[in-house]
Amino acid sequence: MDAITDTEVQKNFTAVMNQVCDDHAPIIMTRESEPPVVIISLEDYNAIEETLYLLQSPKNAERLAKALQDLKQENYQKHDLIEVE
Image (cartoon, rainbow, N blue to C red; front, side):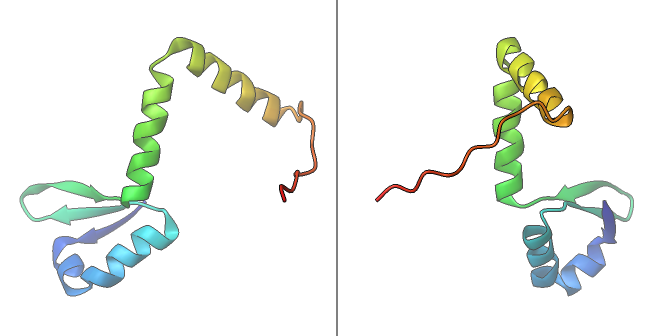
């Protein structure tokens, strides 16, 4: 995760915001004599919130863990996409 000072963020605000959104990568903003903060896009924040919500259910967490394990072990079937007219 990249880090940048609050002064650099102020000088390049739009570019920093665009980078965070385009790259889907959070940036740590350091501040003099204050704790650092993380800048993250709303899209990525919402994805994290949704994942946390889904993982609250032990059953969902178990199913997701199994799906990831199956994917890593290439234990899945490929299907052609169905085009709807």
